[in-house]
Image 1 (cartoon, rainbow, N blue to C red):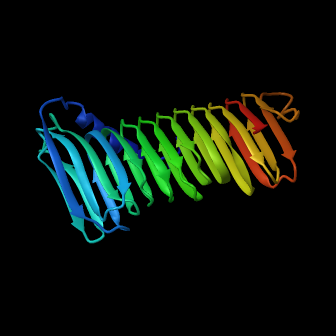
Image 2: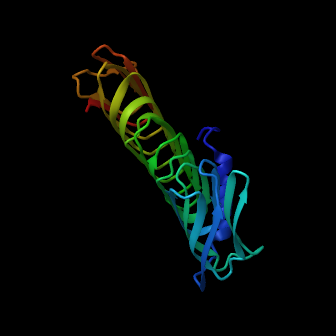
Image 3: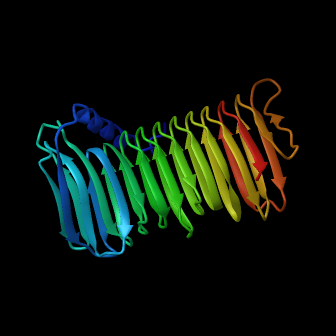
Length: 301
């Protein structure tokens, strides 16, 4: 794994989940809190265990409803200027019955940052930038309309993008990455989880994986750049490109194939390794794929 793959955050997050393991089911308390909010401001939500659902609405306020465990000390919903913070406060040294199952409604135009430990996190209809993180929880985001970032340690990430072109950064250690409908730019990194992308118009795509497989479909913009690297993961690509594309692929011990009748070449007659070069149309877009033992297949959509 490269140093740039947020290993420090992953280690800290795993330590947090270890602390959360003793939690048990118990009594619950219903909660309902509201605070006025800037329609274009920031909202930060932080819980440890349970579930968290966040949705945008047309009111200039943040509303929190749901339930919290008996051992939760309190739920803070605080406004400070343009920022609203929602945080579950736990007693020091105790996580017994500390679940929080919350629904948070926020102004649709706000930017949102949310962090969970052992809780699934779902967001929809929030038009601002998203920054979502979870340990041992699934992250789902719908209607993404601004540049956003998603990170998990062992949970899946599922993103559905809205109409405008945006940039999405997604990082997972062992969960799968699924992105649908995105036009614009995508940077995706996975250690062992698979990646599945059904995209719109692609300007820039950068994929990194250690052992997970990647499946990609989309349309390449005229000057699009696609870059894929893996150790043992496979790449299956089906793309359309009005201006055509040029592709270069290399593997040490995997196999290379395509749907255009181009045969790969041996890197050396004395050892392993294949190289494949192909051009379709004017070759405006560029694809580069490199693996150690993974397979690469490139086809038209």
